[in-house]
Image (cartoon, rainbow, N blue to C red; front, top):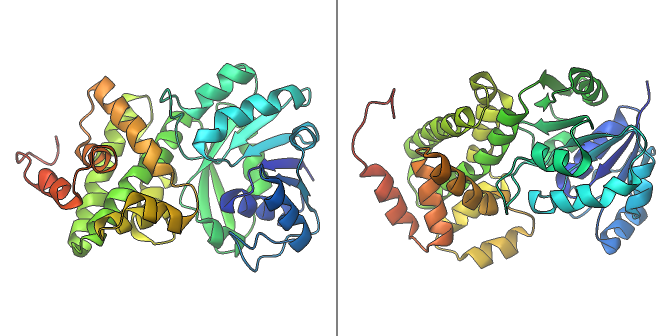
Length: 334
């Protein structure tokens, strides 16, 4: 069955998802917030800035009016940075059809409050609106290129999760359903902070041993946070947790990892952000997760040291020494 989907957010990930859905035969609208970018997309039928060389299918429509995008689709799929998520939800609310369904592929938390995005959506739209979150190890360039990818779709509404899986599924893209919206969101947010840390270690030249240890102990931090806030262990050991963690900590397609690499090599934060030229979710998320860990008494030493590098001017090498010089513990209870 052909569905009408609006993808809100014309960055690399939003564009890749719009292309995927259109290739699957659905009617897709792609909206971006910058008129000049939208005009270029429409003229070139390609997102040459973020996904060069990938042509848009004919059934992918580029729209510049948010009212048109939101009002003309059965499903809204939001793919904007977490800092803009609340504003987009507010903006589309007056234009939604009678029985809207909202999904998002944003990996982050509300920066000001630390709320998970399903809480933000419920506050604005009401708890009766079906919502879902897409997350997992998925670089936009590989999805757009049709390379095999698997993700998780989490929703409290089982029918909505299954429906989204059916929209996304093809012989190169596989999605699994979940009801654990908390665990999926926390995995997707936390891995960005840990990817910065992994990049820092590699930028300092510490090698594969250090990277493996950091990913493993980073997973322990992700599990502590996720379980404390209501996530499920099987979720954090799945695609949206350890799967995404491995991806972003080990491959330089990750903007968060590249940001950390720059820090480890001695570049300034401003220089790296300017060079990357796209949202680096882990920068803001590090502050939010640090705050959550302090409030809930969760031991997250890698996150703490990453926060101190970003917000207290701690030298990367000193941060690593702080981690290694901690009191020895049993791994089981550490």
